Image (tube, rainbow, N blue to C red; front, side, top):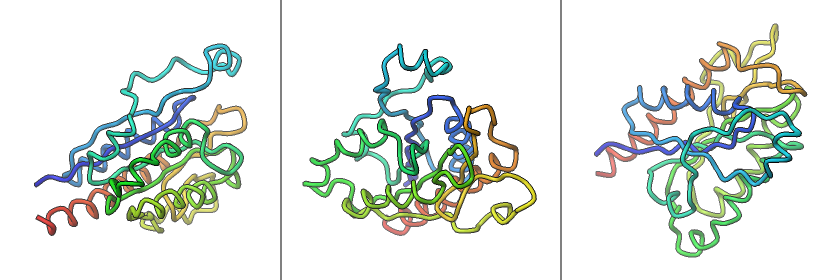
Length: 203
């Protein structure tokens, strides 16, 4: 039986989306089936226009019920003041019924990020998200330092032991580097192997 992983993202300026495509590629290279979703955008069109946001992504919007379908979920989270965006929190805050029935218990979870700067929450965003996983009984899969480029100090590199990432700059002008995209692909591959190994063993 082939494992399935959903990638669930919030990406106003598309930094997370670009990482997600590489995460998806790595997942598929590991042999798992994938689907890419976005969360519901709660900001009004006026606010998005004032932010000079690009057009919305053409991706299906995840429902709470769909979170029960895959064997694992990897969340792409833009950071807001060191924690997840309100849009991602809105989804997770809506999972009370799934918690009550244990519907997500035993499923695998992972995270990747976009922050304005290197000290902007590449770790704290994960730590505040893991709380949800713990309450649901989900199995969190950190990335560790599986990619040596996370240890580089001679250039800006997003990511942490909790997942791949990018540093967008305070105005969002910096795009994910080739190195960051490679780390994201690596994370997808590693996450896929963990989930696939479990599903094969279980069956």
